[in-house]
Image (cartoon, rainbow, N blue to C red; front, side, top):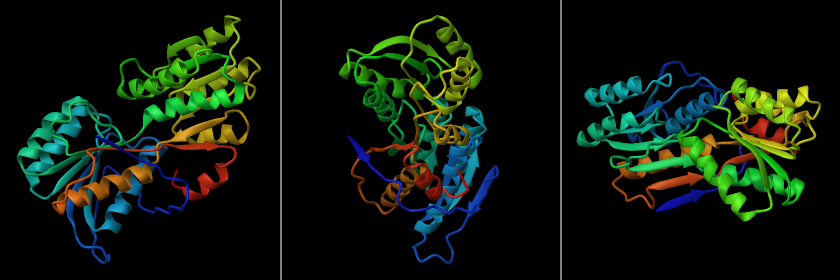
Length: 322
């Protein structure tokens, strides 16, 4: 069963904890009960969203009464598996919450369960959840569906659409594409004139879309699976004199995309709602530790859409950390 949580932008977060490769925080002095020590593993913290998520997780964990060790794996699956195994060997932890680097970490999950630890995935999960007690993520499919639906609001339901996907077969690509395909089924008059892989980076997205714009085929709207690719697409649009005239939506709310939204060069971007994800994960872990049955094994929070209309509010709620 799946549960979906919807969270708004209300409530400012002022997080002052800077993350290195490892952060350990105690809950001493807090009014919350000490719930034990958990290990939070992140794929990486090399972009603003991932850094922000790490900061928010540590702060919320402390407030809820957890002690937490926070490690990043530099996108290295083997390194993350080793972190899991070392955490198990230490005997310090009641549970592990993992933003997963890849399917290989499931061996570590098996070992963790055999050692009596609770195991959860956060943000990026795995396909095999045999040894996972709870899954928490933002609904990437919803971002895909909403992006095309927003294009329809701007352009009507009969227009030429270009789609810039992530890397073929990547979990996030598959999830977002499900949302795109759902919207395309709902609006059958949309004509997908171009559909290719930008491989999550600006350079590949530029090379891809340069050929599209040079073809002479009219493009009315564009959706990209992340802001990195949208950055490359915007440059191609600028080179072709159409920047700001074609609606474009992407994911992640990177600062350069927020600046583009402010300048009228992009319509919007979806934030993966780090606060809601972390809150849901920590609440579920607290319930597991207390011996309570969690309502749903899969919890999906709604993304946050940022446009020119709520950009100021979004920036205020995320302070200077994101």
